[in-house]
Length: 375
Image (cartoon, rainbow, N blue to C red; front, side, top):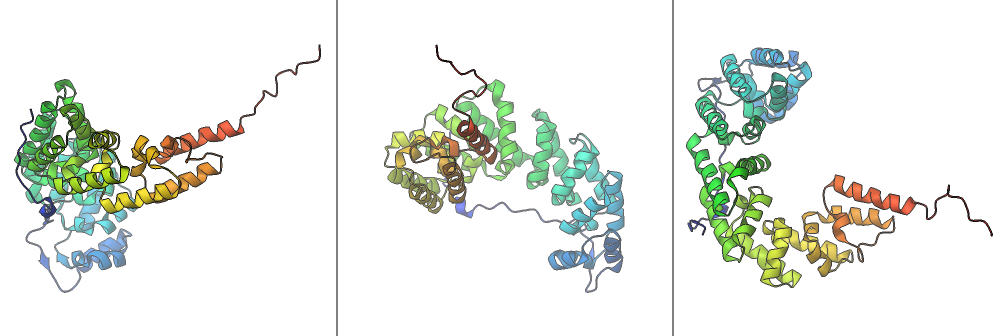
């Protein structure tokens, strides 16, 4: 039996508050630009006009360390063009002292395989690397904690890059959420031997799950159980949604489920089966579903086809129409055929489309086979 907490929360009021960047607490802000910073950025081929337009306040700070930061990035293997891209996107980096940058480099290298990969991460997620020195202890403690879970280093690096707030906050908050996830997994019948892999996949696909209150997960699982999902089905949903179950709330799910059941004309039991095939139905707003149902029905697809292949609702109307048009050119009528050919990623569709092309172009007879002569 699930030991789920029934705490009532207004999830619409929950917001993840980003921790403020404060790389130089004693820096001064002048009405005039820091000419040394401007000249250094010019020398580094940084688009100054773009910096002025988007984050001009950085150019007014003293002290700043544009040359020093660029030098450290060069030592890590970053090219001049990469450094210019980093500084135009995140010019706040020049407010980090060399000591801060070196401390961050050493911290990240404890989980990064090499400096080349670290440079790639900094280029994609500069704000995650150039953070306040006041967060350093929390970052180190969180790295130690996730390493104690025997998580893959690449997973830890991805968490640090894509959800830096989770590493800047006290480690106890992450411990609480991870414990809640592990507890839910075990209570829903998940096998202990598979829990590490399950947790890695979940955190990899939705790093922001760590930033949600544990009560949200418990409340949503309780709601779904009350809707008739068994413990095994709840585990499947928790695994398929990859942590997105924490993005939901009972009110929105109630509205979506009611709309879906009414539109599909199915029973509650049938709806549960459809949800297990297409968990995305739980978090699509009613207006998005209405648009997608309208597009499918307008293309001649009937409701029984949608019920058979509900994953078609994960695709936008534009993508569906494009694929239908492309298939029609090769003689495939989605109104009478399976919708599976429409489903999946772009790569999946191209493979299915290619098979149809081969089938149409394949000759009906073998041109090299000898013809039968008259007896």
